Structure formats: structure tokens, C-alpha cells
Length: 122
Image (cartoon, rainbow, N blue to C red; front, side):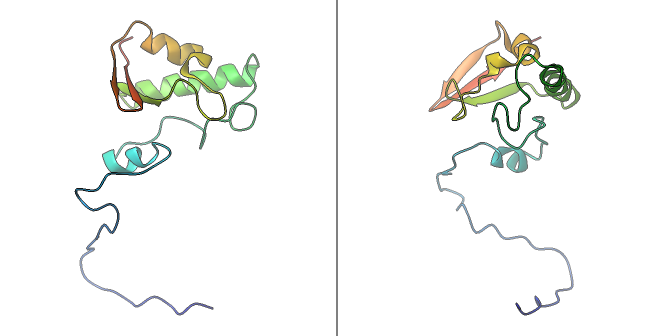
């Protein structure tokens, strides 16, 4: 059994151990961006895995999932989607989600390293 942590009183003082202010962030996914920018994730699953965390395409559950993402994008005033590569490791793509694709169709896009920045303009 681990010892109990010491009791601390007074104001909360947070210290960041990683990364250093000038360090490059080495991450394999973008979920840390939500916390870093103080915004919630609009994606209703922890990761994009078709058939496991995402309902199978063509099913009523998938259509509801796609609607939920688009609704959360609107509710949270999302203006950009960051996309790393054209497909995820589990072979998912933004184009797989019709309502999300409609929000970015014909909108501006830019690249920053491996990332594509997709503007939401609809």
C-alpha cells in the first residue's frame, strides 16, 4: 500500500514538468490540444476506430453519431479542424462523416507540418 499524500493547505500552485516552455511537443495524437486550449472535445468517442468506437457506416447509429459530431461542432463554436494525415491509423477519414464533410466542403485549408488545418465555413 502506498503512503497517503501529504496534506497541503493554501492556494493551488500548479507546476508543469513537461514540456518545458521552449520544448517541442512529441505526441501521437491531438487530444492534448483540448486541455491546452481549454476547449472540450467535440468527438463523442475516445479515438477513431470504425466498428469499435464508431458505429458501422450505413447504420442508423452511424448517422446519429455523425449528427452528434456536427451538433457538437456548432454548440462549441468550432472554427477549425486539425487533421493529421488523410486517414487515421484505423483507416477513418473526415470524408466518412457526411455532415462533418459538409461543414468543411470548399472551405479554406492550410498545412503546418504533418497537420492539415480545415476551416469550418458552413
